[in-house]
Image 1 (cartoon, rainbow, N blue to C red):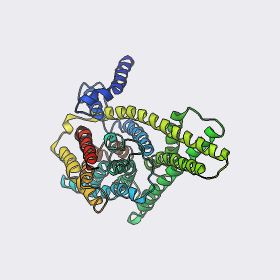
Image 2 (image 1 turned 90 degrees about the vertical axis):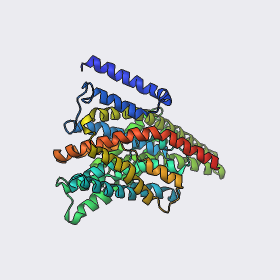
Image 3 (image 1 turned 45 degrees about the vertical axis):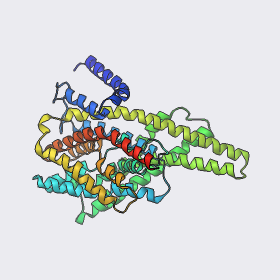
Image 4 (image 1 turned 45 degrees about the horizontal axis):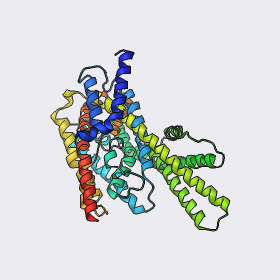
Length: 432
């Protein structure tokens, strides 16, 4: 394609992205599915305008999907106004840990049942394990004060498990001999599990808090850094992720917790302002506290608005890439079976076990079991293992299964998300 043709295609796609919000309200299809279909039509599976494939273009796919996931994780963190009650986080933590482990175990068995070796089966299972924060907007919290436990749980799960899947990907790479696991797996356990997870959470929380407090100080005391929220958001994402990579901790977790921490500072500053007004603090102290609370609220709102707009763009790019990677010959019986087993068996079993004895209602457990959306996160992991030493034969074997699973998930979950969540919301309203 010539530069002029690329300009026409990109311009048309951006305009389409701007118009789909209204257009898709009348169609039984999600924006992600539409973009994916356009990508397929443009790729080798369609008119062959864009030549993109795995593992040849793994580095490009890794970069695009990595950026998409990072922006989405940060936005997800900002959407979640931190709940102080520990019990609110028990369910998301179980979904991102216990449910993920069960899903990986079941899908590893499924892969071996389809004649994959242990390392390839585990690699496939780990890649498919995380739910997707990029494509799950219809089932996520609608605003920062949304108190619905199901939406909160699914949103927090999507933020947590893109990073939580990394240890299992590293374990699978270790079984193939391209990553050091250490004697009895101790190196993997200490560095890839404990250090990388705890370090990622700590780094993200600390950087988000320090960054936000610094900006508030500059804005309220020094009258600086005003009106630059888009640069602040991108700067925090890039800075946190860069430090995480240098520290060998999970950058996905770090960026998610950076967004979460920024939102927590806003809540904390608001509480401080309320306490200052309720007590006999000097007027100057009260004025500063109120000004900081107003600035924090405006800043997080503006940053979140920018992140949401950016999310739409990276969703468009990522889904076009996924569509371009898809080939009709990938629609084989084993690949479709893997997709069906994950969506209809492994996910429901894992969620029902992880929510056993929890506070979710029966309807929330059913919807949580269904809405295990797979998407850009799985494509990132697929590209990551390809660029980090996984054998081309293993990558070639699992690529079709991963793409078919993502495509099926995008279609069935995209079609069902809005009507099912509307029914759920209506039932909640009637129950009041």
